[in-house]
Image 1 (cartoon, rainbow, N blue to C red):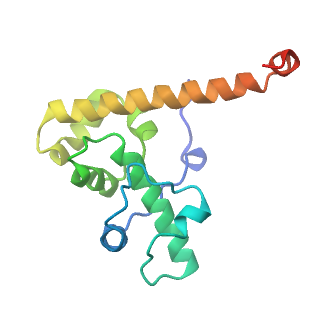
Image 2: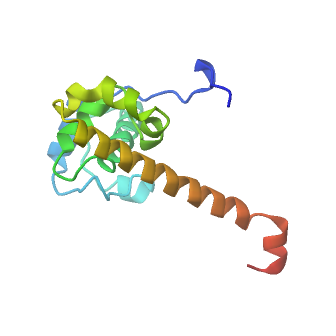
Length: 152
């Protein structure tokens, strides 16, 4: 399989932990593990720090990256999600595309040298990647001409 060039890889969102923390402090009642960050009507309900529109859009991208990381870390380890973001890791797909040994070796300090925890996060990323892949395949198959013709 050919390796992606730097130009074809998705651009990572620049993470500003202070702005992220300011948002979360203003919105303590929101569970970012389950919050809807896709629909504008829900996004407008949140309390936003004084931000320009472009800063708000950037913060939404950061919140989505943080939400993705919350899905791979244990529930009580939100700090680990932020640490992974600071280290440039923003999704389970990014983790799962890295060999396990390399991921653990490069991030072991973030896990306080707990290789079992690092492996747990890695395994969770693999599970999420598999789920995303299966959802994608199901959607593609639903668009196949024979599926539409059969009325499925």
